[in-house]
Length: 466
Image 1 (cartoon, rainbow, N blue to C red):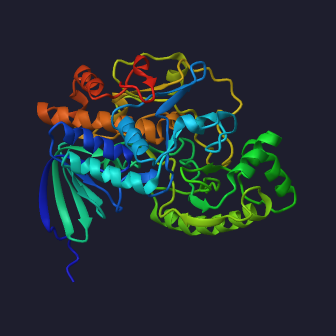
Image 2: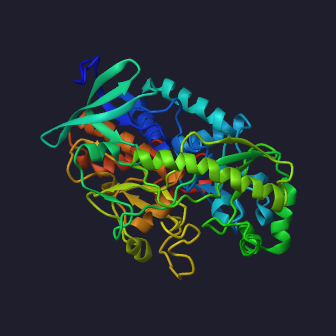
Image 3: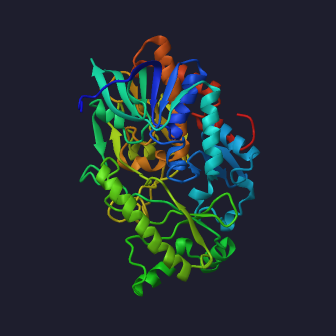
């Protein structure tokens, strides 16, 4: 047997996008829409990443709610807005204006109330169509196993799939893996988890449950004013029934009647960059969800006649590597309102990154932190690694202080960053410049022209033309 890596083919592209979550989809779409020849490499058989494969069909951080106006408004536009409108036409997402915010069954707190809950299978198909529409070359069931770096530039990546091992050459590469895999393979500096011990936020294997009596579940919460059943869980813990390391129940009604997502288990100690850890996480997660479900059926309103529809095919990871980029966005920046001239996307989400050892504890819980704006402004420099000149790294692996990962790691801002990265790659190809030298004003102008939102002044009511 020949143990040397054999190469089956060589392919040439302007831009190679690595990873097909919402970040990668937006990146590939925007680059191809503007004429670049684009490859999108995805290790699974569908696009959408955590939203579809990990079955968390909740677009957070891309809209906001103006209480005084009783209006929802987009914080991320462009492809994000188009996806919402296409899903609405297909009756495949929750109509925001049908939600009773006083007893919202889709979340139990306003951060989740301000979300777009979508149908997984319809969304997979729509994302396929978007790629076909702009002639992206899509490679499913394909993993990137190595990179070749020459003079601080990626010359090519090696893609492995059923057809063999292939060299994909590109002028520019976009690392949309969420874990900074390509940056890591290429020798970029990074941070793993929190600085003190490299531990990462808990992971979750999602469980989807059918035939839940949503009204019974909701009414109990409203009556006892106990969001997420904290008092019930305390009571069950004292009786020795609830012995999990977390103290809240997260059950979110999806876009179909009596269908709920259970985002409750918090798996401590999972390293999303280690295969053994991920394997054990899947095994333990399935076992833990089954135990949790038996408790739900016996002790929680609405679950008596429920049954498990599915568990996700991959574990949901909240945190792994973050690149060390040209700038690192800090909590202080958000508090004092640091002015950036290279903002390329916004987020409306808050500080949501559970403690690695205490899964129901948020580091900023109970703290009086007054932010300068309700929206996190994301600078372009945070997407650009220090070392490799033709690599951009949008998504949750960008260069931010760990606590800032909370507002930027969710799908709304990741889509926004993806769109910016795609346009930046297209500009870099056309100008034959490095990613860091992309003219910011040109990038921002083109983002606005494409309907993307990069300033608070652009935020508009859902349904209106941007």
